[in-house]
Length: 359
Ligand SMILES: NC(=O)c1ccc[n+]([C@@H]2O[C@H](COP(=O)([O-])OP(=O)(O)OC[C@H]3O[C@@H](n4cnc5c(N)ncnc54)[C@H](OP(=O)(O)O)[C@@H]3O)[C@@H](O)[C@H]2O)c1
Image (cartoon, rainbow, N blue to C red; front, side, top):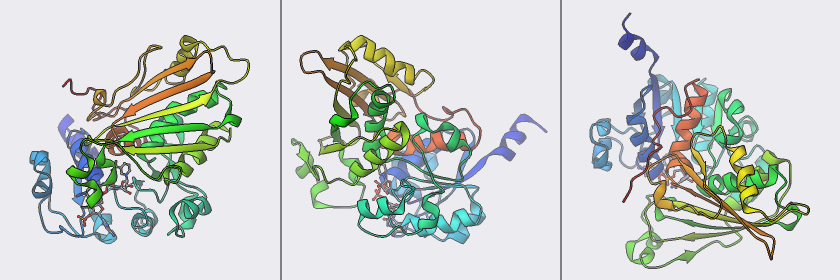
């Protein structure tokens, strides 16, 4: 058998559910460049029957696939692995049926981010659609769960704000650099694609351009997700106050995490930076900047990278860690492909862009 035939036999047939959304579209874009994956099935309710290319002309040849209405039986026969980019609440029942049919599922919505259905219900205001599956899912924050993701049949990919926040916060907690009893404030800014592709007045150009809009201050659904997984992954409970803001850009997210230096830790930015960099020594997509430098969202546009800056104010002992990601990349589709690679025993970086645009 030639090398090409071996490759063809090994190709992973992937289904993308919710392929007309921003996350679904980004999955199609990334998977088009993945050497081991072929998207064989893509779903939409409102645009079933249309070609993907009609929805996303930017995808070129990768748009040559006809959208189908979601039918778990069709998905099961057409794919070996499923990526679900559906609204929360919609994915739970479908994902349950697919997992029971033996398909590995990577869910990019919120339905499988909480092992405790009570925490989900408190955050989302409705009962978990499949509480029996909630505990089975692995939280797909790759840098802190590689081994568990590799063995998982169901992964709940973290939200975009929690990804950037936890990547900045977890090293501070696990290394004992900040005092969890003091709590942390997360001030985060996101591009408008974070709100999805659904037409809404508040997402119109004239509403978003030339303005910064705080929203759901202290009341965003990602706040309990951050607090739950900060404790689960560090073993240290920490109160989080989250201030999300929409800024006038299409994609990109910058999270700034503020905490208080732990007692006995010297206010030395270089030493803090070294500790954080050690945590990510084997993380190909995470870059920790030299002390005194801060990340910008445009550095990570279109990539799966996360860039972190760390500093401390000697007078107030206030620590700040900032993380820039692309909300559709490391904050969603990129991280999902990273999970797929681990689940299939592929190098973590396979098919994922690590080089951004320069202007
Ligand atoms: N946007 C981000 O930055 C981001 C980051 C991380 C995670 N997420 C999560 O990823 C998921 C998708 O986000 P998005 O921004 O791509 O949303 P979106 O742009 O609104 O897309 C939603 C997709 O789901 C489909 N859909 C909607 N309701 C459905 C239903 N009841 N049954 C089946 N399909 C349905 C839509 O298809 P049609 O309308 O064509 O029928 C569309 O393809 C959400 O759970 C979101 O919270 C988003």
